Amino acid sequence: MTSRKSKPKSPGRGFKTAEQVSHDHSLLTCESVDALSSLFKVLSNATRLRLLHALSLAEEMCVSDLVDAVEMKPQAVSNQLRQLSAGNIVGSRRDGLQVFYRIADPCVASVINYALCSTECRFADGGRGKEKT
Image (cartoon, rainbow, N blue to C red; front, side, top):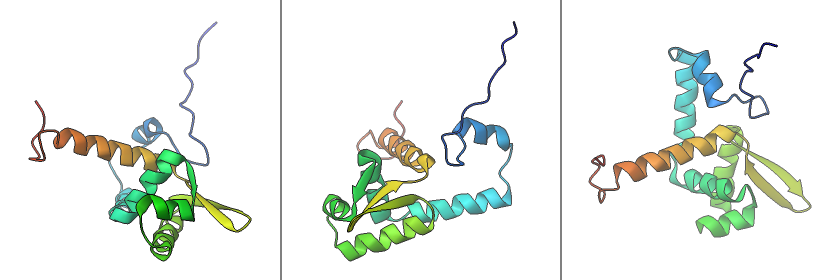
């Protein structure tokens, strides 16, 4: 009996695993660069990063809980959630009068965690920006 090497499973909803993506591209295409640039523009806002981090910790939160978590006005949180929704980064569901948000793209939580890891490693020396040796 021969064993077959199976392809890595997709995390669902049309998203690819990091391994699948790395096998798909040997060099970034112009379209990929544009898509990455757009993603990083959305992620470059401090409020949106805080909202995404809160969602990554809780998996799903209603707007009022997000308002409390980031200590901002409801309208400001709603504005940022609207931009994250437009970028297909967060998804929502309605339960009665409340709207619950979750991270729709599982890769976004990974990007945030990798970035946190990178900043912690680079600034572990007291914020001087030198890598730990």
